[in-house]
Image 1 (cartoon, rainbow, N blue to C red):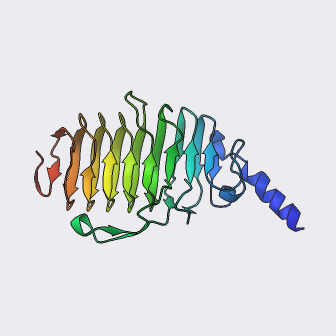
Image 2 (image 1 turned 90 degrees about the vertical axis):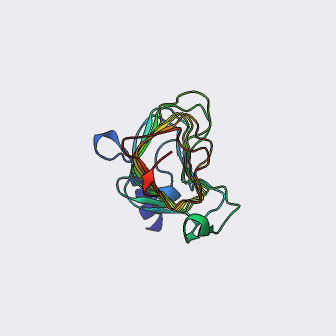
Image 3 (image 1 turned 60 degrees about the vertical axis):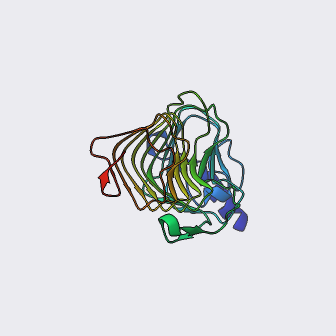
Length: 233
């Protein structure tokens, strides 16, 4: 009987949600969520398409990513849920203190720098080395991050040549690495630094407060962006 139940769960984990969207959840994370995804973390996306969380996913690993992407044209809808890792922080800004300083596990990560058109939206990622790591490249990859909260990470997100919209970066050790990008309608609160390595980026309608420093932050602040209650430089 136990084998039948486990087999049923395994087969269910391969089922697509409505409209051809693949489901990701805490059960399939231990069984394999879809073809190409091995048992246990990381959940590996090897085919283009739409993927959607149907539960929170919690990981205690400091070395294994939760979701890895190795295909172009992937959309991950967090669907209001959270991906939660073991890093936690107390305080904010100059008094931010985080544990697991040597951890390497990311919440969502591309497996190389030349994966194109990744979109992550609609949820929260917290407690990782990098919340969303879409690689380092010198060419536009078409990556989009929207309606996402990134908090208590070593780095909130890394996504050069990207669009970030309605993103809240809260109490990360570094807010973002996003050179030549557009960050709009977003909140950057209580991070140790606002950004590292983000020349030629534009911040539009961005609210920046209680961060220790803005190291090579956005080159241009537009549309009523404010930095600690004043006009941004």
